[in-house]
Length: 65
Image (cartoon, rainbow, N blue to C red; front, side, top):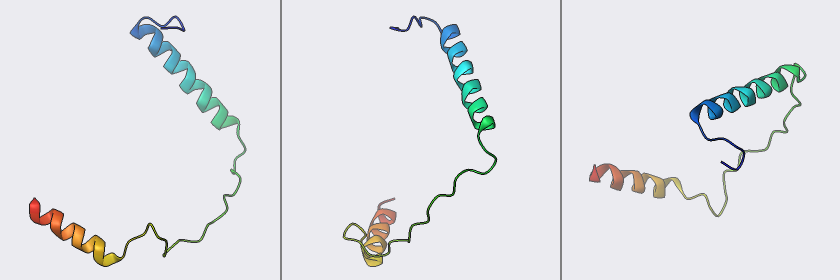
């Protein structure tokens, strides 16, 4: 409301404009995006639990269903 948007008509017009601007920005970008560095898949970390714990959790949850 602070931007003077008081109706669905205004929201729709702003949304169409923003989508059009985003699509134009995508279209004007280079054909091939910059390559993203590949990170190794982490198999061991303090936050990753053992498969047995996940199996136990799944078994308990499926038994309750």
